[in-house]
Length: 70
Image (cartoon, rainbow, N blue to C red; front, side, top):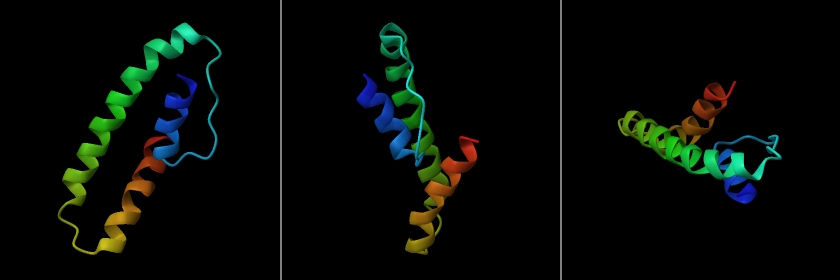
């Protein structure tokens, strides 16, 4: 569960994150966190789909995740 938890935040671009110690809590939060990340990524893709510059399109999701996790 810890690895899945870290994977979500790593894909979102965070360099460091605190890991909850409670395994039961991780078991509850990880599936929900993965689902939310997938939905957020889909929304980002919908909005970024109209951007034609591939370099900009690749760079923006990282910036959006940085803003979303502040």
